Image (tube, rainbow, N blue to C red):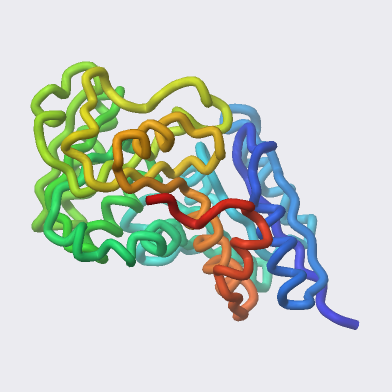
Length: 286
């Protein structure tokens, strides 16, 4: 009898997620038996108990999305060096009853940017948001693309300062400037190799809201990367209308899922084959 793989996703308001579709495609391509289930957990309502109850379901791998990437860490037996540095876990493997935390966002985020390495190298990046995903993005741009100049724009001054302090400890030679979204005129005057939206604004649950600060100017932006992957993304459309290279988070989603599948099973699968089964649009738009 072949092994049955049981995976899932924990998050909040995740009915929109395509993770189940991605793993269905993986199972089909690999000829495996398995299931993938979404678990909608409220971070303020008995989260610990509900999370622990999932372990009785014989799950062998869990994806983690906002707002739980940091919340799950105290409940795990150990986490990888990258997940520890970023204080964000988005993938949990279950082995002999022990829970191991990983971060595959860095791998997934970097995938679609490889074509544009020369455009990115030694440039400057604007990051919208200062949560767990933003940490993975800054880490990837610094390590993989040698970007050391960052402007981080967010809504909470305290969270922005915490972000800057913790990331400077990891990326010693980086220059990280932070600005409130209501007071960022100086940041907006700079030229950016890439602007990355790490907020849910413009995504599935906020499709009518653009993530940019007032007076954002496309003229000084070369690449726009939106971690949201809804097809009706206003920011992506606006970027393309301004002749900016733009793509959404769909490749990142598939990439980090494939990396998680590798961690959970020791098996891999070709990204293009999975992507083409799940998404009915070009991988990137230029």
